[in-house]
Image (cartoon, rainbow, N blue to C red):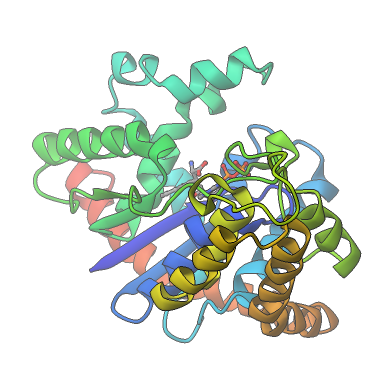
Length: 319
Ligand code: ADP
Ligand code: TRP
């Protein structure tokens, strides 16, 4: 299995990002060749402040390293360090039907939200296709929101192969239905845009405040609680194995007060993330090392990308 996945550099990662995206990709490293790309070129469609882009991008690299992504085994890089992404995007754009892109839901949603309708925003899925095809990835783990982009990537790969001969592996999406949507502290899906997150790497006091602020119903202190509808439990169970989940659920049913339940969740959170929080601080103090790691990641990615591009230039007649 050859996995490629991308993440746009935006904001502090939270528990939803961790269980929905970061952990699965780190876990895939046990059995697959994983290439993780920080999509700074994609981010330019929405972030046009250079300091902010540089800062965000570096923060995401620190997050992924701290959470255990192994750069010896896999590849972690900034998209813009590998110029082949832009080159392949142009070539792919010449076989990408306008009608296909015009049906993109995410483009319409972004424009409705007030993001400028640039050519880059419109062609975003073509760049995403280039990201995937450059590494001949067969598997792309994404959330449901990316399903349509992955279908476009398949369509464009097939169109290219039909036009110029078998060149690309046609990628398959691995939609992470099985990864439950992590609820936020207000009970909706946890998301930066809803301001309801528990950030992984914020100061202790911020995390404590978020966890203590989780919504609960108005059951009395010692009344039995229903773990299935309780947001505290739904978050806490992410840290537990089956037996531990059962034991905790039993305590809710026996009437553990919500205050106690939150204290336990805070403890579980801190225990689980302590090594990662420590590693992140160490990386922060050693930013030169992180920068070097990212330059090396770019070089490693380039080796694969250059090989694919050689093939593409030949089959298209550019060489
Ligand atoms: P946000 O909604 O906070 O802006 P992004 O859209 O940047 O998050 O998502 C980055 C990755 O994290 C995606 O792969 C997405 O599927 C995953 N993710 C985000 N929020 C959650 C959540 N609440 N539960 C599970 N996965 C999530
Ligand atoms: N568009 C993806 C998102 O917003 C990020 C992304 C860019 C990506 N290139 C990719 C995801 C390639 C998977 C494969 O989440």
